[in-house]
Length: 132
Image 1 (cartoon, one colour):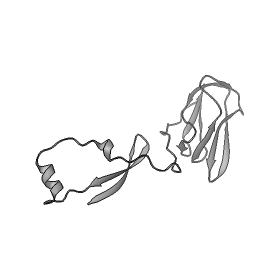
Image 2: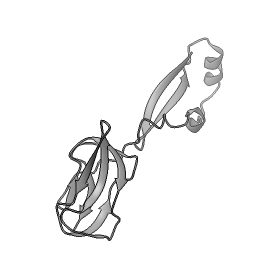
Image 3: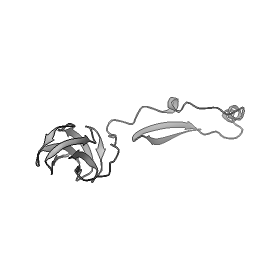
Image 4: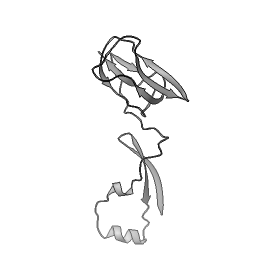
């Protein structure tokens, strides 16, 4: 009997189909002949539908980090690493519930890290950009 499961590997969701081995079945006889490795990649279907946005790995916010005020999906990243920004500059555009939210810098300085890219799903409070 085949069963479908959803797993997440490195933040990417996959759907896998796995055969349940029942004692006395032909598959059981094959597996009892010896152990071996299974190529799991062969069982993995392509990533889930595009409407389910991938999730950026959450980064704990620290000093100099600009965070997301809401959960949503990153639509645009307006800055790059090394860019000088001033307080009030537009950094990232998020979309949540079909509404766009502009994320502005609350600091003046240089962009050290951009934690997200367009299409990433983010949580409220998640670090988006680090400025020093």
